[in-house]
Image (cartoon, rainbow, N blue to C red; front, side, top):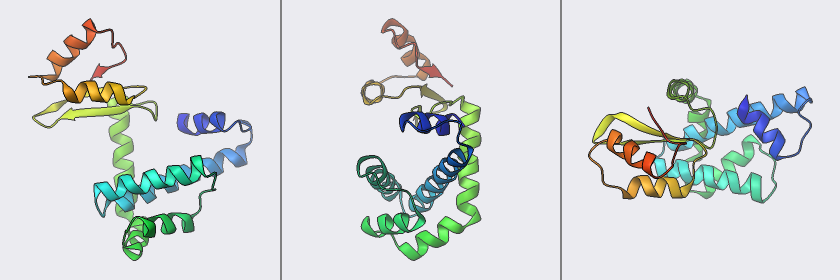
Length: 165
């Protein structure tokens, strides 16, 4: 719900308009499922799909539609027939629900949050609320033996928004 409210606020829309709120909720869900379906054809393809969708909606001012998703899928080289099948599948819905559960377990409350894992230390991750490129760059450029060591170093650098999970 916070994502919907933030979207309504950013677009200067009436937060009391229930019909509009429901439409935005549905569009955000549709875009998430579209992204999942695109990602089934590769992570890079999924990211490219999401980037192009954001460009179309946020920069070009287009309204979301299922046909827009197929057009973008085609533009980035996805198999559009497979994309449409995956988009309608229970697998995409289940993967989305799994992502939602994982985000809830990790304490992610804002869409601008990121969770970074070190693949050599699988049990630890770092939650970055109000995610920024600079924070990610700092995390990735620091060679550390453990997440605990990294978090201890961050406290010296006043990064109170980072949390170990």
